[in-house]
Length: 214
Image (tube, rainbow, N blue to C red):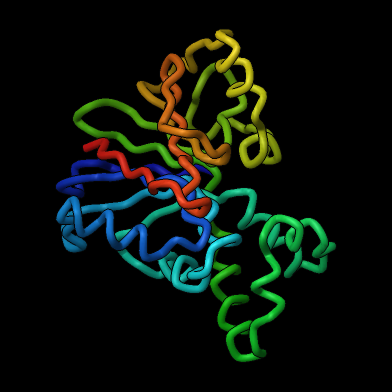
């Protein structure tokens, strides 16, 4: 459920919002910041594929040594279908591309989805600037503790904390300097107390958000 990254092992660390198949947008923004694969790291808030056009390329990032990700709800939908679950929900949320693949490509993607099954729900990054906690939708507790059991469904889907924050009812998650989430497309990156939401709807024609945390 958890994974820890030591910032001392990297020169710079970036966190990127929901990709949803926008591989070229990621490459473009990495060129802009002069990303160095040998020394730098990208951490994704999840939702690599669905809705966009470069879904396989985004899933293939799971094989890149310079790329880490937490599991998003879209990865979970794909995992559930491969495990024999209903496919209606995935199709309704942008998963139709998978079912139109030829058998060879489909087998390739199935192997990548199996990699996604091993993704953590929470990544903790310890940097010179403090402790960053990265999860897809939420850390469903008011106190962050590494290894603490939290509800997987809420980590992947929960919007209650963000909805409350947008009504002016936010509170800090103790135990972390900053928590970074995606999941809900916003007009711009939004900070509420120590929670930063960075899904800016790249797949809907908006810019892809990449922030530097080290």
